[in-house]
Structures are given as C-alpha cells and as structure tokens.
Length: 215
Image (cartoon, rainbow, N blue to C red; front, side):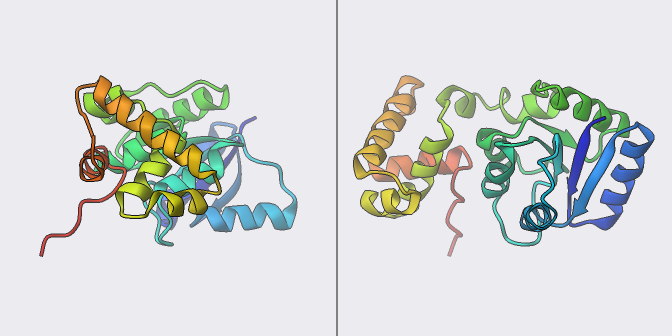
C-alpha cells in the first residue's frame, strides 16, 4: 500500500483525490494546504515521510515551487498536480526534483497510474512532462543542476556573488565555479551569456527568475 500526502489549497480537489486513492487501495495519511503544514504535522506526530506527495503547483502561502519541491523531494516522490498553464513554473518544479506532472484536467485514472509509477521510484514520462521539458529545447539543452539554478536565480536577480554564496551557505569560490559552469553550459547550446545582463536574460527565458514588470 502506497502512503500518499495531498497538498493543495482547494479542499474540493483534496477530497476528490482522497476518495479516488482510497478506492484504489492507497493510504492517504495527510491532506492539507501547504508544505510547511505537512512538515509540521510530521514533526508533531513523528510520522515517517510518505511515498508520494501530490503537490499543487501554486499554493496560497507564498512559497515558491522550487522551495516546496526541494523540501519534499529528498524523502518522497513528488508529483505536480496542477492546471499546468504556467510552463516556466512547471519546468522549475521538474528541475528542483519533482518526479513528474499530471494535469488537473486529466482523468483520475491517470493520477492513480502516476502514483503507482512514482511510488516504485520511476520518473513520470507523460504528455505534461514532455511539453514542459522536451518541448522547450532551450531549457532541456541547458541542463543546469539544481545548485546552479539557485546560484543563477540569486545572481541574476542582482545580488553580488559574495552575497549569493552567503545566502546559500557555500564558499565564494564554489559560487564562482557555478557561474563559470553556467556560462559554459549556455555557450555550449548556442546561448552565450558573457555578462550579468545576459545571465539575467537566460534566467528569464528559462523561468528561473520572473521578468521585471513593465512600467
């Protein structure tokens, strides 16, 4: 029996998923509105990590999708269950370690199948995954590691490299090496980024940082 956690700030979505999963013989051990609430529940009850987390792409507590996935993916398989109308955010979730994506418009049978697949440790190769990654060749070809994306996000957003290193708790030399590798990777796929402005442009293109608001 697969142990599942549902994290979505729409109660009707959670109730529907819980009923379907229980009919399928799975155990829904947690249902709530945020990753922080789930982790607090685990700390309070001493519950072990679940096998699979079904996670909404955008929650109402202000946490980013990268933050949410990183807090979960080390211990559980994370399936993004979302409308999936924000490709950049979907790509961000996959880069942070999500096992795959299932659209909220998909039949419940697809969700159940995804839970079975990821509970066995397999990635979820479906249409949503393909459209978010393989359909975006620029993102797929860059192949930035999670740490590289974190460094790029902060550096491109305007922080000095020393501040980036301090924020991430890494050595300045490590942050500098990450920026060098990022530039090399973008150059290798025909998207050179020799300046900080170029790196910001690449980060916006890949959904790592949001484009500044006009006006």
